[in-house]
Amino acid sequence: MKLMFISDIHGSLFWLEQALAKVEEEQPHTLVILGDFLYHGPRNPLPDGYNPQGVATKLNAYGKSLVAVRGNCDAEVDQMLLEFPMMGDYVLILHEGRKIYATHGHGFSIDHLPALAEGDVFIQGHTHLPVADIKEGIYVLNPGSISLPKENNPNSYGILENGEFTVKDFTGNVVKHLKL
Figure (cartoon, rainbow, N blue to C red):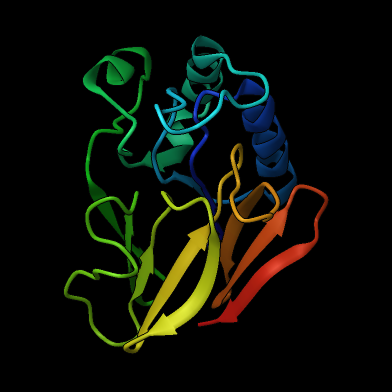
């Protein structure tokens, strides 16, 4: 089962459309969105193609094939526009015999992990930095940000399939890779 992870859309219709084109290309079983859907946040610049209503409309078309969690820039008013649940702080996914704890990363994070067993997966967004590493026997992952990457990283997304996590940019280059 192929999973695709995106995070930190921050209202960018332009970058969401790039990500949805990759959904069509990659054909994941499930799209997992790790929060920060519509609002750019007070510390961020406006991303390219800022259009929160357009983002909501596009995401609603994928509502039946996605799983989502709330980010620190998301509010109850966002849920009024989005037709799929996105206000949970985390979601647990069973994937290829592993437990995946997916969250935005402003509560539990790579630096403050929840109780997980060795070999489990923790994936977050929030930092806008791609990560594919192992910490205390836990696989720690971050697909980066599709709209506002930081520290000279490219706009990116993540794919988890066949025991491998890969962060890719939108031209297909591999940014990070880890065998689980």
